[in-house]
Length: 175
Image (cartoon, rainbow, N blue to C red; front, side, top):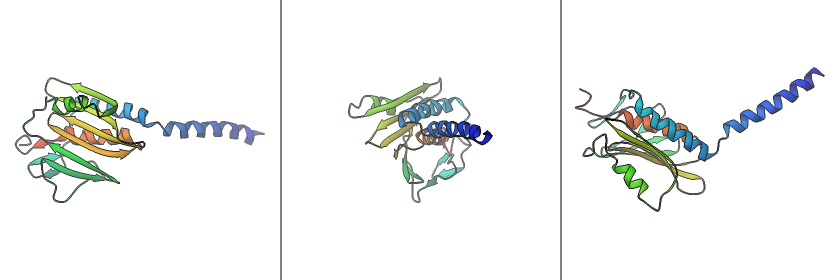
């Protein structure tokens, strides 16, 4: 009799845990953009990688593709390729990449959020790319990172991407 009671408690609990882990892409997108833009209010990670004259924090598991140089730096993680574009002519307060995104009628924006502080402007966005793929975009000023990925771990990917973008430093700034 006691074994039955435990079974009736464990099965629903297991079901709840499985369903919670299977958040829809839209839910992941909403959580991811919210968390990513909040990171702009925190102290950036210290750069652990140098690419040319640029310092970046590269999270564990990400790799800078050999031969990558500014303004386009390629990163790899799992099966995804990320493109980091650095426009040194744009200040940290630039809204250029955001304005280009929202003014493009061909982009089907699933979720987007901005964060404007006195010394910087940033945003995170998820754009529908195909049935099961999304373009993830994060930016702070003139630094933008994007990738096209499946609908798995969108929230985590956006947070990692913002950590990379937020950590960007030129050689002069790190001295």
